[in-house]
Image (cartoon, rainbow, N blue to C red; front, side, top):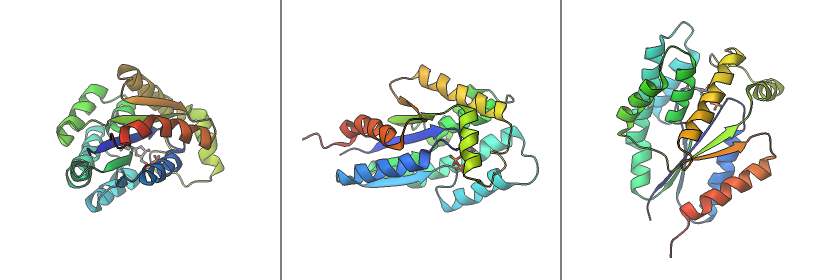
Length: 209
Ligand code: TYD
């Protein structure tokens, strides 16, 4: 059976981790090996890079930031994602290169297409079979985060127009490649969202016999 690569994208506070765990449980119940992982920080090296990009106190130049995410990604794909896909596992991942295009591109300094090229080089052009976008407008997302009284990291404390640009960037990416993307309104109930995702994923991971 061949591996399946599913990524989750969306702004901060849209409920990605909940949906990711629910999907992982479902796919496991179908008898497939499931790897749940994330970027940045899906490896030991990646955890160090994650600490730099999310918690570094000073400025990080935009190109340096893009390269740090790409370095994390290159190592993660080579040591975790590709080996898992090669042995036939289903990889369910929190964020991948679309995060770089949306976030690093939304800073207005870098061109989204250039950011994409860096990730293509870093990953040997490994493209997900499915990308789930949990789409929530930036303002609603902020309300949810505040409600959780979550401690904001460096990126999360940036202003909401940045988050609006991120959200727009994601929607544009999804429009360009509708076959890869499943765009869901993240203000629906957890159960509704999970059900739609399961329906889309089941035929991709089921035994063809
Ligand atoms: P994290 O706490 O993992 O995620 P979440 O917000 O999904 O709970 O934070 C990751 C942050 O890193 C998030 O704000 C998006 C950002 N990011 C980028 O800017 N570029 C990237 O390529 C990736 C993978 C993440």
